[in-house]
Length: 393
Image (tube, rainbow, N blue to C red; front, side, top):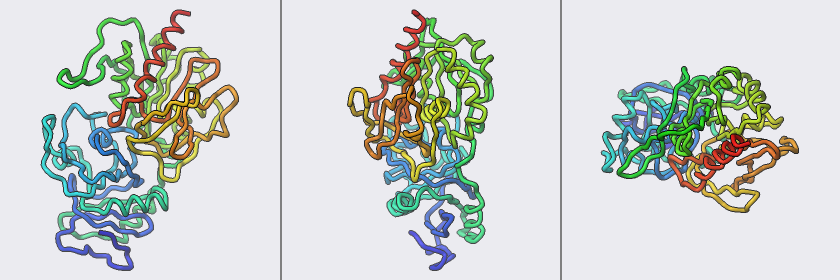
């Protein structure tokens, strides 16, 4: 259900318990779930058909309200294995169909109870097709989800709240989702019946800078048979090098890369000069591009889904990938010593870069999937190949 303030400021039905209010006054009425209250953020959409729990716990969604285009969200319930961090980082979620009881052998709870336990505000019963078309036409807007069992809403105040929120451009959110202390990681990827694995003996060490790292990225790094040490986003160069790394990983994360770069770039510049292999994903990719002299920009609607075609410009091979980003690297800004290794077949945007001389590369897509296809798993092994070559030299 959708109305503008010119039509009505009151719910269109007596049982309405939630509303999504966009900054321009557009209203989407529905039914609340999770925690009562209101939350403001950037409203985006994700086209993935599976993996809603992984999406909701991806730290890269900090500051955002996620609209799921697939209507049956909640149908497989929730479980502890599919968490990408210890709690949701997004501001809220918008779904089409009413949430049902869980129907999957792996479930240990339902989405409604999980959302309430994690302090997440949701709205269901929304025309998500209409909302998605709005975002495609107008870009990702500021919005507020308000959930009240009384059905009473101060629409004018909610519109003001949406307009007063500064938006993601210029906002550093990596510090909000990064770990607070250094820790070790040795868990590997999940498999049916076996669950998650664990590495045994190895003498290869990767230091991962956590700007909002997903757990499955760390599992994929460890799966290459490397001990992984995770350090907070603001860790200085000397502290990282004191850990004696064989390779450096720059993680995904939320917010504006230019804002995060204020403290990240001086460290990355020094890391580049060490000659160590470096691999970046998502925000880590954008930060590497800026460190090489490139620029980033805010996209109209961003890329969020598990079916994004990306082409390797060196081999012409096409990979179907998982993506989640609202900023992109400006291709024209990259220096001559950096090649564009991957591009989006949706819109031609930069999806990967590699240095011509140094063992450094990065990608915009999420090769760890979770959710999504596994076409890009090889990138983790490419990183390990660079590490082993560098160690041998």
